[in-house]
Image 1 (cartoon, one colour):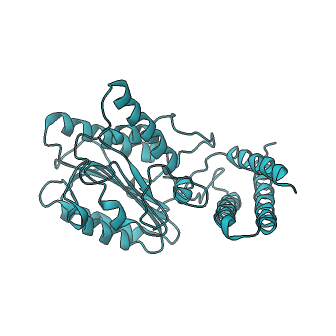
Image 2 (cartoon, helix red, strand yellow):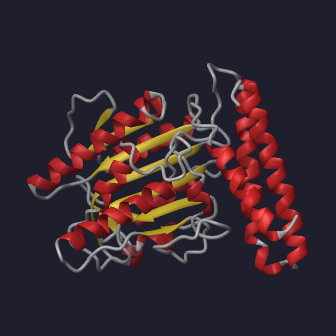
Image 3 (cartoon, rainbow, N blue to C red):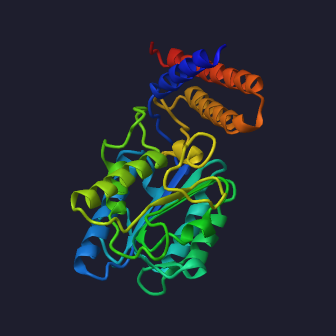
Amino acid sequence: MSARRLRRFATAVVLSAAAIGAPRISAAQAQVLVVTGLGGERRFTERFRSLGASLAAVMHTRYGIPDADIAWVGEDSSGADPRYRGLASREALDKLVAAFQARAVVGGQLVIIFIGHGAGADAESRLSIPGPDVTVADVQRWLAGFPRQRTAFVALASGSGDMLPILAAPGRVVITATKTSFERNESRFGEWFVRALTADVADTDKDGRVSLLEAFRYAQRETKRVYDDASKLQTEHAQLDDDGSKQNTADPPARGGQGTLARRYFLDATPVTVAGGDAAVAALYRERFELEAQVDSVRARKVRMPADAYLADLERALVALARKAREIRAVEGRP
C-alpha cells in the first residue's frame, strides 16, 4: 500500500472507530475525586463550589460512574448534594483515597480534579484547603497508591504549574492550569475545562466521548479567547504531561508523543458493560482500545524505522483496527 493510500485508509479507520460511540462502565472501573479548595473571597468560593457541583453531578448522569466511586469535598462541612462528602481536610482526603484504593480494580483508573488556588514553588507547591494545605508530596503519595491503575491529576488552580514535572509519570495524565508557580493571577482555565466535561462542546472527533486531551484543548482555546476579547495579556498557560518525560507542553501532538495517553483517557474508563450488559461486546471494545494503542506505538517509532518497515507495520495495525471496528458494528447490528 502506498503512503498516500495508507493515509486515506488511516483516516477511514479512525472515522469508523469513532462512529462506534460511547459504551457504559461498571463499578470501580472509574473513580473520581473532586476537591474544591478555599476561595478566600466570596466570588471564588461560590465559583469553586458551583464548578465542583457540576462535575460531581455529571460523573454519574453523563459518565455512568456509581455514586460509591464519586467523591466531592469542599470548603465547608455540609452540603445538600448526595455526592458531597464534607470538608476537604487533608485527613478526610487521605481517608477517601484509601477507600478508593480498597475498591480499585486492576486496569481501572483514578482521576483527581482540584479546583481552587495554588501557592508555593517546586517541591513546596501546595493547594489551598481548610486546615493544612495539600502539598505536591501528598498528591504524589495518593497517586502512588494506584500502581495497577491509570491515574490522572488535574490542577485547575492558579500557581499550580510547578507540580507537573514532580507528578509526571508513565501511565499518568497531569494537567495544570498554569505553566509555573509564578502565574498566580486568577485562573479561568478551570471554568472552561469543567464546561468541556459537562456540556456538548469539546467532542472534536465526534466519537460521542470527551477525552482529557479534548477537554484540555477546548479549555485552552476558550481561555485564550477570554484574554483576547478583553485585549489583555494572558497570564495563565495550561500544561500537560502524559508520558512521564516531565517535558510539559501546551501543545501536545497526541500522536506517538505527549497527548497520546490523554487522547484515549475518558472519565468513564474502559467499558466493562455495554449494550445492556453484554460482556462479549465489552471485550470487543477493550480489544479495540488496545489496537488503537498499537497504532499509536507504531507511529511513535516512525523516526527510528526504515520507511518501508514503518508503512508495513502501520498497515498491519490499521487493518487489525478496521476489522475490529467492523466486528463491533456487526455485533451491534449497525452498518
